[in-house]
Image 1: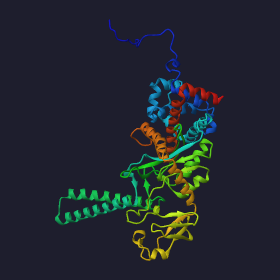
Image 2 (image 1 turned 120 degrees about the vertical axis):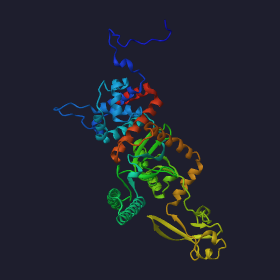
Image 3 (image 1 turned 60 degrees about the vertical axis):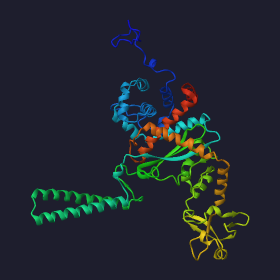
Image 4 (image 1 turned 90 degrees about the vertical axis):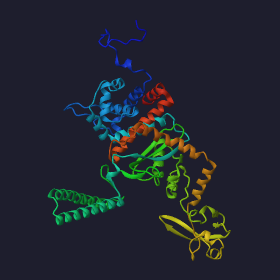
Length: 480
């Protein structure tokens, strides 16, 4: 007689059939998904086919499909074919979908056709979090991360890349033409000549294709062309590597690490601060929020616009002048005197405010002192010009940037808070995605996909904070 635990016989018949609900414990996260989706007003959120036609074959209710996708993204199953397979064998999905088993095409079409509803469902969950008083004294950290698109680097073209391809093809064509000439002169075998002619024909065809790509790329506003996913762009992911990606912007609450707002872009971080700040303000229902960002977001006009919205923006400034590398005095060595409205140069001379000008859309005040600069012994360390004086440009709203820098200096921990807050969610979502790219193409579909990732992430965060039972109670109270 064995001392191991024995299982039930596979062919054993039970007198009373077991209920499916018995296999899903009360604190299983699928019960939270079920309550959350059942409480949503799907029609007002923009989901299709809420009220089906009375004729034809019935379809699946959007609530069923939304539950399936939330479960899938919560459990790192994003593929429609894998979701179809799980619906047939996964007990939790059998319970959640009430034994419905949609096919992969139906599953994929729901995600493609209900982008608006899925994005609004993601926002609806943040609204529920707001009603649970999750956002008080709001501090949000903003950052962007590159997510690989469904477009390889070989199918992305920039001006230099197209030019290089065309030059190589033209060189190859010239080489094969010379081979044909040599073959005619030497009366070589006809088979070799035919092979060379075939390769030449292919090269000429490829050259025409590249010239068409070059023409399309020159007409493109961004001077860049992606053939597989036209909205994706070749971007730097670090100081060395580049990949065809989307730049996903997020605003993350520093207290609970919930992603309160997000936006999919195909441009760098600079210039995105105001847009994401406004989305975060709308999400939490407050304007007086504190926004933390890294120096990649530093743009004086963008920071000023975010401050005008009522937010407190804290963005460190990076030194991009290159003066130190040239052996010149850095701008930081010139001290501004607010009372006299002058700059004091490193040599102790006063640079007066001479006139106001506009450069790159910014209203700037020009400070210089021609007489002092002409006779200054430190001139070689100050400017490379032999005739003109060193000029200091000061933005008319520069005092607001200086006040922001003073706040940053008084709160050195802000950089650590930003990093701990906003970078962790990106790492988590990319881990869930695996070493892969987005499954969909174009802005609309990619935005839908990232909304599902963020909804799943926020749901998991709330389960970690409240527990399954606590979150179930909170959701029921809000829906009543």
